[in-house]
Image (tube, one colour):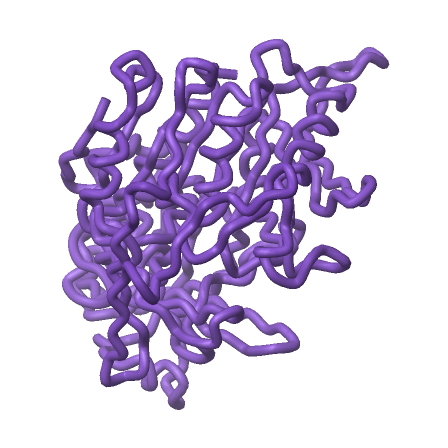
Length: 451
């Protein structure tokens, strides 16, 4: 089945939070202390917030901004968003009900300040999420007037009020266990166990894979555990003592991970396990659906079932793949960024047959600059009629390559450490934000139904 979601206003997709979002309307004749109220102040990354400001002058122009800073050994990054607002007659602004007049987003959108962040300082890349125990700390500020340039936020203009907001990947009680079993490396996340007896509860389980940048990314696995799944965030190259390049990885490594996870005492594996992968991780996920009978539910995010550029070994042989130098189009832009629109070689694609018991969901960004969307249609149409019923293809128009959990920024250009270049990954901010919100709901629904 192939779906093309139609986009409506984000506010129409969301439920209004159950907690109060509108402050009491009290007329004031002089400026009261300005305050920012955020509810909840500490919540999961994928939870909606209400942000409101009180104590301002009636019908005053103000700028509400959000800033997030991240530091590592390699770089310091600053992400920021802002919006222009006009206060009500009682000197209040409510982001749930009041329109943003201009800024990094416009219109009524309670989460606009969060998904519309752009990187101010540092190389082009995603938010660093290699340690899910650390929250994303955002500072919400209110400035007088309409500030239009990022640079002006660092001037001597003192904010009228500030509020720290913590966005977490791990719900309280989720356990993180470092995995060093045999040659397996990664992190296992187990939901909070609310049972009072000694026998621990069992949960459906998912292996989470990322792409060709390698290393270990924990954020999505921790968030899945926060929603009731045991999740193994699995590194497979460029991490600790694992191979430094993906071409040295063998598929037996993933088979070992499946066997280890299925035998975990808290895994409910009667219906098999799931695999979620992004980009190259999505390709490997579909290959696991093809080769591994224990895998019953697979989600591939912008991972065409074709080993492209990077191949792996299976049973001592190289899995067929092809090089972009022959079948791709690579263009160097004036800013030095790489634009690719690679075309696959159909004969190198791999297909599912009736021996595969897995349900497969392909989530595709319609503005992904790495692959042609038509190649997904071609692959889907080449499946046998019986297997085609087990595969769902969803195209999100205007979305880019890196679909992550909702209310996180779009990164349409990312520095690829293995290639030493910055690649354009595509996507338009608002459409990408809508796609991330819809796809995350679909991911949770798909695994719940099939595991």
